[in-house]
Length: 455
Image 1 (cartoon, rainbow, N blue to C red):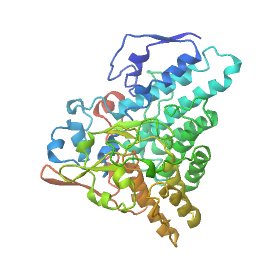
Image 2: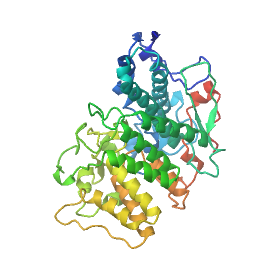
Image 3: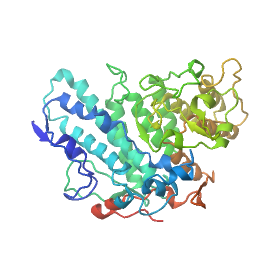
Image 4: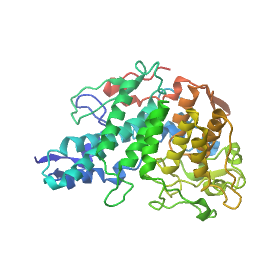
């Protein structure tokens, strides 16, 4: 069936509002007609729409870095409000935040729904049934993956005791602008995104004909499911899906082969650990100062210390270790190192110290100077878990995971609170504060009729 849609114009609409109202209509008069499977695939291959500008507001609010006053003063107001964990007006138009993570993610969700509504309508020979399934799988992955990023940022941490009452996301599952969609619960949000990612895992290929990490394969869907279950603190399911991902893709980069003097350590599309490419940008690399305590936590024979960080002229440290390979562009997609750390954590929580240490040592063998690497040892599950969480902190900096980690670990008593020193004031975000759910954009509340997160 021939269906004409305005691709670039409509896809830029902030489609999470009710009825026919919309925001951010950055229109483009270019029209495209979807008549073939290739046309549908082309929607998913729009790199600037699909893989860039992932949800980064939670990274900007996390403790991965700090800003100096001079740079803070140059940032748009919504960045300043994110940095100090304000609970209102963060994404107001007057704060320069109309084009924000919420709208970017919902544009991708709209693309996913467009794909899922059209893939069975276009003409495709029976011989292309595998490709049809692949395209469907990409659509389900795109929708579930973006809902996962959004719920981490804009809702409370998942707790089985409160998830049915806590505010989740508007679950838009079609392109119908007239369909009113209230905020779901956190439980409903997770149920939907897990359903999407499971459908993706069933449909996506194990081995793509042309390996391309800008498209998800089965390993990416398994990795996203492992992330989802980790954030729910459902460790048996997290273990199962991290393991499934590693059965497909398990190669690690040997950091002994990398140049510590390079301005950026990695090169885009040349990191075999990458399972799926996504990145976000939150500030210039030179402005994001790394906590010296974190840098000092790396042992002297830990190659990450020089591969991830560079010393600034003011004796502070900046990050240069993004797998995206560009300064300031922060890779946040699933990767093999993350899968090993998730599986190791789940083994430790299950009391399987031997397998947990095997995974963490497999990773560290490629991170430490090979001339004096000594495998990590531990006697008890609690000690093993502590080691693994420390390695997760050191390995996955700026991956879009720290905010989620703080929230889930605080539910287990980690008591991680955050502090900023700016504007001659001390700002504090206590453990389990409701402000760990970033406020929804003001215009979304008005046009969608949604309830703001309670503070």
